[in-house]
Image (cartoon, rainbow, N blue to C red; front, side):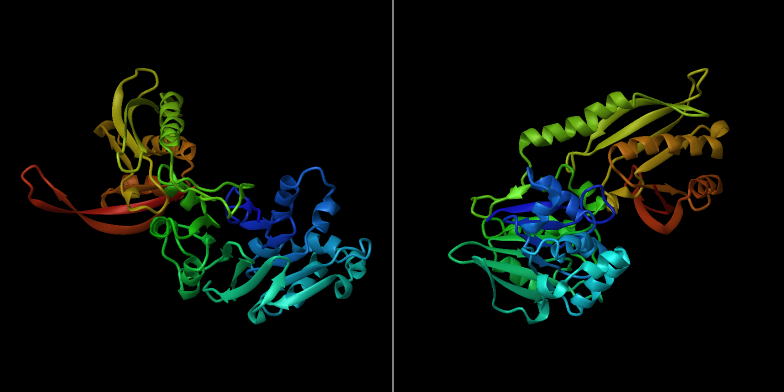
Length: 416
């Protein structure tokens, strides 16, 4: 059994949408971009030959990132131009109607009329799937929990072999747990970092990876940018077009090798130190004063001096601590302190724009900025950047004598 991961991401990432090719003839989900990944994966074949190999397509649910590439697939598979092409599609209810309607919208009227679904395509309702046999596999479905849309996960039991499951999109539920408990290899939705009624999350997912190690090899999938950011320095993530064989002792290993940890540090830190030794702005320049690495996350913090361009006079300090998206550590990850005479909105705006370069290098998609609720100058800066006021928190600090001190802070989120 050979499983090619066509995509590890979701629609909002640079990675391809979650999709899998089994033994070159079974496709699990056909979201946007899946066809391009299929062509990259199978070499030395013409495009119609690659598509013609597919005999079984399983759709987990009808969201665009899981089935929109079904249109070009049907263009070939359901065409009388290739009489030998025949395929079965397993999908949630009303799938035949949805797929035909999508083809009607996506193809010209004359092309659509040439499609012959009756003789080329067999539709099977995933809800009624019990003992479905395909080649050496017994395939069954389980209903998952993905908000208000009907979604199915699929289990492949190989005769005298390993069991592999695909959860599709789902939060943790009884059926997801059942799939993991009864599989040797499981591809599990771990979309973001937040607890959700639609998706499982990578933070809890990493604990699940550790819990099931040695019992079930779990592969995180359908990852958002936030999930990718969170995993930096923590676990080794699967890559697009990775090929996995369930028969291997470790089909996929989430552990980071020490060599890779060092490489991450070098790539994200040492290189960035040189890259950001000096940042030139419109009003001020930033020069790197010091850097340090968080021992727990392996993520760096940069401390810059703020200088006037012509005199090189230090007029303030700004620091940026790299952190995963939506992590609590983001509270106060940008700190600005200016001398009184240069505590101007225009200068702070320029500083934030320069720090954005550092954040984007580390693949962050937002900055969490904080200030005193009464600091109207800084609040106007954040507003002019396009940031929104997320909340006002009361936090507890401790002075030198360890007396409790309560402080109110505005938390602004600047997304880009």
